[in-house]
Length: 310
Length: 284
Image 1 (spheres, each protein chain N blue to C red):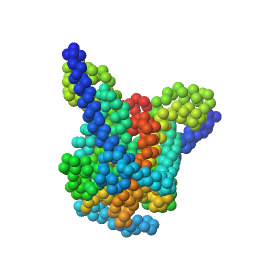
Image 2: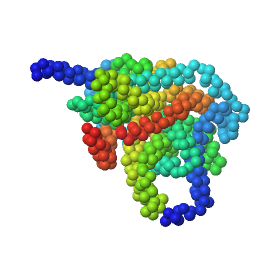
Image 3: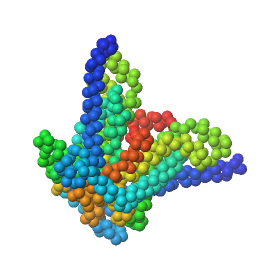
Image 4: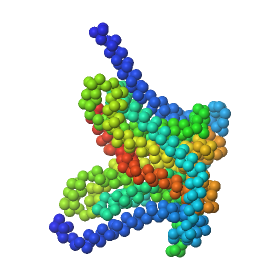
């Protein structure tokens, strides 16, 4: 007994060291570059700080937040986020779902269409942004020349406060609907053919089969896709910054753009940090609430699977 | 009922096929037309773009493309993007594979907590951390240094990579591990000689995801790189647009050239990319 114990302790120690050695690179990087910035962001949001020199000194408590909550630009940002989320849910995702179901039909050239529809997702936001700045340019752009044929020319697209957000949404849809289409298509193909056939044999017409069978079975996929879409919209930056920088007169500004303006252009790092914190809390509250109330059923399934495996 | 379905006239079936085909083609044209406009527009001069928007270039002006290909700016940006993407991918896959191995196949106290910690990383949007990240990188002296982009990309890529790899490592039967241990394999030997070779498809999937997200990253290089010699393609495209904003045709040529590597990579790695995105979305 006594002879065994030290050895087993040493073995256990060696086991812990192995675990530590394997996990350390990932854990160290994650803590240093993901968790620390979030904490630092909370800390600097309590100071008036131009970001230069050593640590911030001018403690102002929650002043940055009171200033933020009194700023109409901030409410504009929130409103634009809401508008883009609603447009995505009402137009972009149903469009992606429709295309996915279309590509699930017997259709010549199906593989080709799938490759085409997904291609924009592979292009960087920067490339997409610049391409559409040129296509939607009021003077020489392709869009106005096409619309000119039917007498609809003269749209100002990104240059007009009333159309800028819709124009951005057009670009967002072009870039991202392919991702959602692929998710739906994968989800649709995971539905066993027997279930659909059974519904058809029971006499359901195409709409009834879709409404009562396909759509509910796609539920988990749709909920994930909504989640990705909302989180993506909350942090929207690249497209907006390159195309409009938030203008004209803040009409397309998002939280991330406002944060970038103050943090990197006007050197009000404390105030910009407060915006970061608000973005973080917004994402967190949405993610937790969504998982708690909307994805609960999906996740319950997942945890039972985990428990079984353990 | 099913008899009635079979009796449906051939003409209706053919009509339905044609209708679906028309819908699909119309939708596809919304994706294809902007891309073709870019490619052809790059061969025009800027005045042709307003007088002859739809037709083929007349005359063809290859100089827009050849000028860019002859300058070293484009090639340098291509190299920077490639180098950063490869370094990011190697590091994130290596660190994640090690961690996922332990999280999948060892049982120890705090394992699920650690895994949850990594998984919550999925909820932190990158844009949220960028400002304090910038402050930290400046403290470490990593501004205007490729590592200043590579390391944060690795850190933010960990959650998704670990989740996908851990799922795969778990699916490998315990019997294989036991056999390896009996044959005298150390844990690292099992990991290196048996698990990793078996996990090749999963490794390909996460690598493709890492390459694409690094290749397209804009915000981080934007704040980290002041020095134009370090710029990646997305920064280069934006900057080129600013510099030649009145010469639309030139900008189109630059956009098209910057697109080619991404589309080429997509053509090669389409399957891995799509399986990665769907796996990530469904498990995340």
